[in-house]
Amino acid sequence: MIDHLSIGVTDLVKSKAFYQQVLAPLGYSVKIEMEHGVCFSSSAGDLWIVKSQPAKTHFAFRADDHAAVDAFYQAAIAAGGTDNGAPGLRPHYHENYYAAFVIDPDGYNVEAVCHQKNH
Image 1: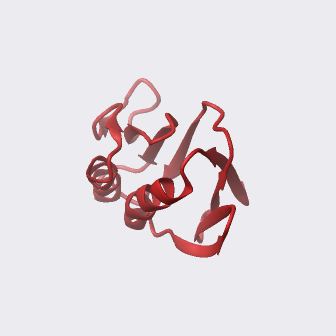
Image 2 (image 1 turned 60 degrees about the vertical axis):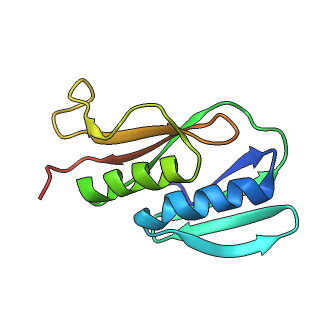
């Protein structure tokens, strides 16, 4: 289990607003805010965004159900994210893999995924 993840962002204010909106459906909220970074926290662990040059990568947040994946995607698009895969099943990963993908303001490929059948 990952305790926390830290990513570099070029515009801390813009990225904070993006992640506040995008992560709310997944149960995250701002835990710590400092001049050089912001920590979003949930029972699943922490995401830090820090002022620095981004490194292109992909990361995924676990969602409890399909509705949370859908809400994540809608929040990301509303916050200025770019579609990189609308919510849906990805059976090439496994039969219950339901996910959505967006590109954040720094070009990160961010995913929300539910591994359970829809209730």
